[in-house]
Length: 202
Image 1 (cartoon, rainbow, N blue to C red):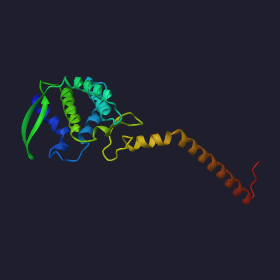
Image 2: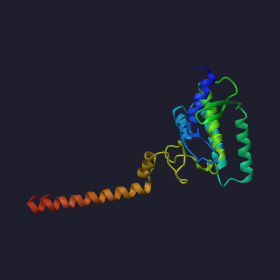
Image 3: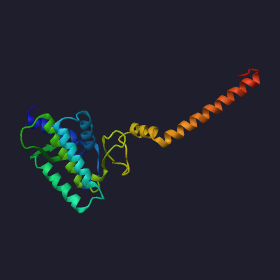
Image 4: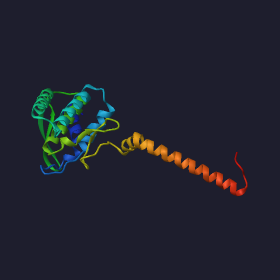
């Protein structure tokens, strides 16, 4: 398999959800979830760091409370970050018809191919109103998440949500108080049961 075929395969894998894409298609998080998974598995590669910096800029731009000067600054930083990417367009026949695929303009390693596909997927979010506001970091593990179903989603998984719930200081204090109370009640019940059958405790 040559480099161009590998690029096409990677692009089609990351964009499998977009094969029947129309402008009015609903937003889907499949490609973005693939990016987040790769970032979690390979956080220290230069490609992952560049994609993370793009994500940070996109999140900043998606913020509703951003002033004009801050927004202009973030846009300038995003443009500067995107200057390094050179795409070329290839057209391929698929079962759904002809599809344009954006590939790296130069021969690229597998990591660079992933980076180009990830950047393409993230830029595709710009087509959807409000999509950037749904990109955020998990409140527990600081991993990336895309709040597709709920705009107020704060956690990347149920495990992270439960961890924060279990370790919240106020809830922890209430839980410990409830456990102490239950322990004291159980102790009194056990002593009462022993008295009824004739045992005495000191």
